[in-house]
Image 1 (cartoon, rainbow, N blue to C red):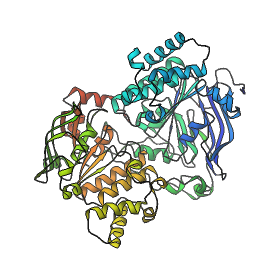
Image 2 (cartoon, helix red, strand yellow; image 1 turned 90 degrees about the vertical axis):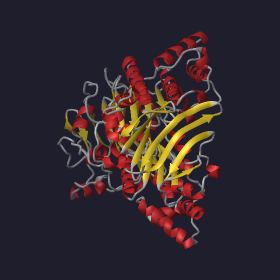
Image 3 (cartoon, helix red, strand yellow; image 1 turned 30 degrees about the horizontal axis):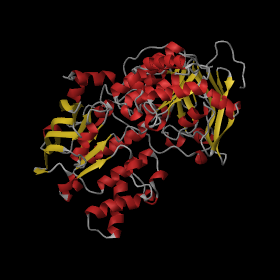
Image 4 (cartoon, helix red, strand yellow; image 1 turned 135 degrees about the vertical axis):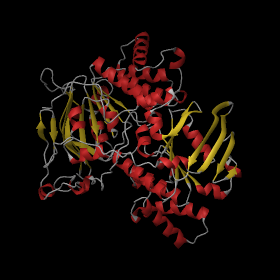
Length: 606
């Protein structure tokens, strides 16, 4: 291993001038300087494509196919990861730097038991440990991350665990080797707020107690604010702002950082959301001056001609901007966004006594509610509460389901096989993962026209015109029609999925966690689109675990727990004055963008 002398008390991680490029020489990230001190947690934030995951990979000495680390150094506890050979990297990964992936379903071997996952890591990196010692280490780390240590639990397979338990297993795999640095890449994106709060608490405690430095990669600034000590904002491959957490959230200096905060909903109050206009440039198409200038309302001729460098603004703040802001960041409240009378309107759908079974196990218990016409009703609850099961039953995807559903005054069968085609057209579903829901072999135009022809007897010319109109309705250019899903960003794919539902001209749109994996700016744009569709008369059932999103868009809230509705009513009333303890806990566990958080001592960047 290559050792580099570092000053006593220096940072555990010291990234100096890191540059990662494509094969054609275009830089993905450039001149990255990033120190993280012993026991500190740094949040790395930015939109998709900004280079967050590229930096996260580079900390392990890894570059994805078609890319290469072409400059700079990554020093972890004095070891230069960029200078290690293949064997040195294999030894370092896990022992010196560990990674926690976003999706446990792809990171865990479905054929291996949980205990065997942990034991295998120890055998590979600590061959000198006896079986009894490995068992003790496994029990220690399992207990530290809040997992059972019983023999029965450790013999379970990943599919026998909840999503939160699977994520804790990934944390255990990362901490079991006691690394110097841990890199967490969006580890709580798909978790409900209660499970997320538990996982974040585990991360915070382990890093503090064991003195492990951590880089937390996320697009969710509310989560970042409630976890990290310091924050780094990345845009188009460059750091545009970095510094201590509290000063950043009180008065972000870079226009891009202020734009990110303006796009984030807050569970504490209903605020006006503003998506950042335009899109970030690709690595091969970045302007000569400030890369954010084309999207910045404060741009000047200097911004277009001259690229700003990262310079010290205060003792604990660095900013790359010719015209940084020094003012406090004020949110605009939007208490009047929701029409409170919508909850009193004639419901477009009434469900009663919905019961559903998986084999002999009952999942839903006598569920009943109304969906106000042209309103947005949020269906919330923890993972496993039955949210998606209920939503799928309404659209006809449930089996062994009973109950009554009245749609627009007419009762219909819950089972899809005997549901009229017209009802199927008028109730449309948008799935959480658009990449899996869109045919990868078809163009966007073919995907939309297939849905149109299924419900309407139109000729090819009319079908093409309707497809183009649907894209325009979701703010996508006509050129998207010729592209395939893999050519699109996550936000674009989600808009295509919504457009596919809209071409069917529905009266009810069921959205299942459609913003959970999106950037905050893209999320703000999607939420604005939902509000526009409501204004056009569309009724929306929005399934989510994010109560901040609920606060931003919902007229009404239905709280589901264990397959039973425990509370429902007007959104602001339920969120501000919950009557059920479960709802109160969901609110307490939701990260807040504003208000008090645990204080941490500031870290000044050198």
